[in-house]
Image 1: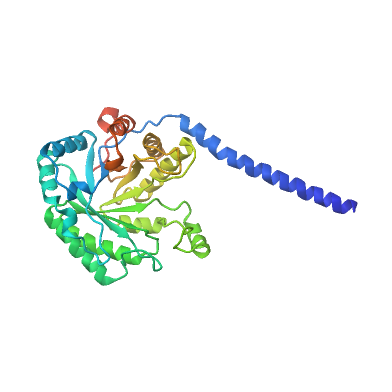
Image 2 (image 1 turned 45 degrees about the vertical axis):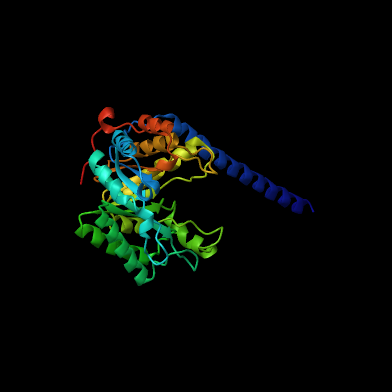
Length: 352
């Protein structure tokens, strides 16, 4: 009985120490992030940045004054690329003309007032995965229709095609085939192909485990995040890759900042020499993750740039999501927290 009681006490002590250790680790990460967060970033912002823009710009009429005001805002805030929502795709890969009846007027106005800005047609849909979704990219006929639709938008005068299909898992060869075919189209026309994709997985080795334990449909599906190999494959096929780094669902600003910093560092190290990278930042407040906001995201990305051994050879910047949630105070925050390179006197990024 005495031995059994001693063994029980040893087990309880072991469990107690394990609990203390686990609690210490839980506390150590936020406290370490808080200490790291206190030092302000030294990196500047960049002069190559993107904006996701609402559908009304291509779907509704606007006054000349509205166009002038919008163009002035783009110039002042160093926005070089605007992804104008022009879809979504129908299930068969087409887009009704009624959805973009004002596109020609918009593009003409931008040529007058912001000729350096690249206006891209933002097109996407919920991708069918395991029987759930709207558009089936595995169907060659659907992909063919998507390309025909892309050509119509290029004929209208858009500077490029911006894809946002979700979810995209890192075994999606049909998506890569679509990128190959679209790049062939845009390249012959002297236009751009850009892609919005989720942030890279934290650990590529964990993807097979998630895949085995969780289905890809339903509420608790495993995250559709690219592996390093898949993200490089996308970057090799696209002129621009916009990383949807927002929706962190983290509880403190230092943890949110650490998230943006690490993804900026990882992504730019991984594909920054292959393609132009835009790191998506939010101007909305998510339903969960109450600490996430625009100034925290911008500060975090600048700290991620500080951590680079060298700046990538290709241009990079942030992608603001989105113009329909960006208030005047957000633009002031952006100007303050993402200072231009000339003002900060940092080495300019190399153009390709």
